[in-house]
Image 1 (cartoon, rainbow, N blue to C red):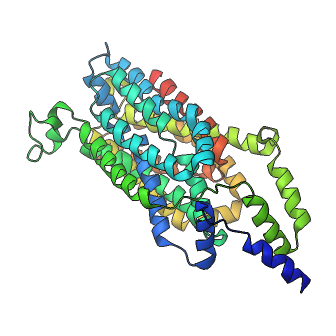
Image 2 (cartoon, rainbow, N blue to C red):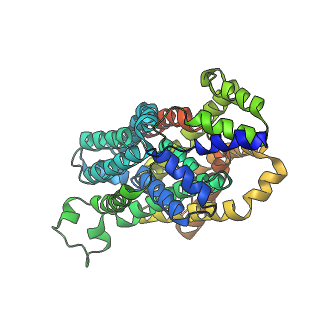
Length: 420
């Protein structure tokens, strides 16, 4: 009886009437089912934010070439590296700031601002007429689109504890799909007057701005998602005693007050002194550098002329290869990866994948000696293997600080890759 009396007032004081976070928590307690609508919202937000990241790679070489700033064909890759690194550099410099703003003012406004940023600056990037305009718009796009860190917190807070894994996996799935669809859109929709002359006429805006169409499609989708996000619930609590009241109530119910206090003390420790966490972040950042360098260098290498050691691919060809490898990656993750992880464990898989990536990448220059259908089959298979091996390194993300270091390392990748 006494235990019930102690528990009852705590549960009554659990929610605050004018707190949006409490309203979400109360709704989660009343409805134990998984909300497909909320999953769809998370999926659309992440997809909108991930599409612009890689959509430019298939046509970036041609875009920089059309700026007429490179004195030689070899210089085009160097300038393309500057454009490619601008987004990640901007995101790396502002990720912590956007996380702090999301903790102070709410997840919803940060998500909406990020989506509006995509609408504005991704559209302007498609209208770029000079190298500096392209670099500045990509940098501002990365700086002001602080979606990825807050959306993971939002996904965890929007669902009940037993559904949080599904919410976070939706973020990863939408991210992966965006990195697949993005290059496909960029490859198939760039230079539309040359590919689809019956639909896009010479002398039209599509001829003057040949890389505007894929950017416009992505920005239009982000605009629709931004409108939908006006009605999504806010999950941030606007009172200071929220954590204490809920933690105490759950601790009494579970009979683990001492364990709960220890957990709170652990949370207050400096993350920089958490050596396992920081080492994981460093490893993740290095792998991120490796992956994004490959993404851009592959696109630049594929479209480069044979005299420079390239494959002389068109934007369609690059889009085909990246789409095939991305689709194969999804099939692998759904069907085979759970069994592989269970057999070897994530750490061993990461080590094996890192070692196998070395001979695989060393073989790429020899692929350029092939031609025709053989070349397309071999390069598609190599791209599939590369994506599968690199995916193993990204199973454990440390969201906030990891996003910052990862973005900074990624900004180095395109710049160094383009210079090479």
